[in-house]
Image (cartoon, rainbow, N blue to C red; front, side):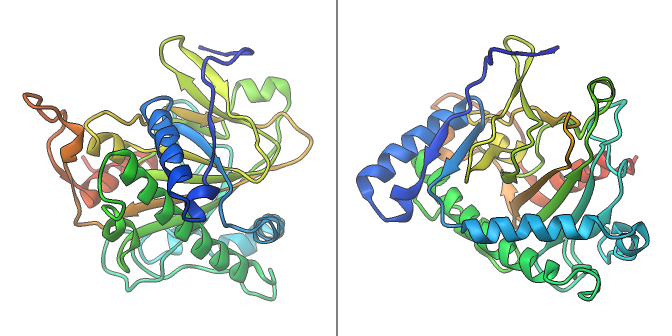
Length: 324
């Protein structure tokens, strides 16, 4: 499998400002563009959103400040200390998504502050504010803004599936909805070491829909099945990269595509930073074929499954502790 110089996959850029402004004509056009992108390639980028440039810039600065801390400071908030095992700092090599490659990234995960006891629920871990001033406030402000944007994207997704605009609101917007935000740092590599490593190994996303904020270093690639090639996702200023996850592919009976993707170790003289938001919904939600995604005489491709059962299986496998 090669990386194509002339891409077989064109990642569309969709301006959602018309929907944000409440323009029905432009919203209809956006919905059609989104529908086409979700059918294939399952990846697109959005501009015209309402997450400010100032917040995005400040966030990246604070993330770099956190990762510059000594390892002892970062390890004081490591993932293993989390009540639910999911929040906090991850060192390089903690996660494996592609056989034979340890992910060459550092990560820091937060989520909604909910009482512990259920999967993915519990308090966040934070470094001392004296060690990293403004990091927590920037992460929390961004988390709220990106989650709000995610709800808007699910509403557009509902319209694209010929559903009521608010069909997914309870799934993504409830107090107990699972929403996780992870900041990544990818150390640079040279041409030779990049061939033997992965920033993040090849995988499909576990949840329903993912929003990614990336810097201009590059490295994200999507797989084109017909040609067996990897294709770079170009940096677009002010854009979020959006992709469909396994849960939504299952929910839409395979209509919408969850696409294999990876991050190659950046060949660069500087670190790569990105921030990803996973809005994965209510644990008790049953994922079964949406009525508008099946024709008369067809059968669902998958049996029903709860969000919790689906996520538990995928997370366990990626961290090397899958239950036997």
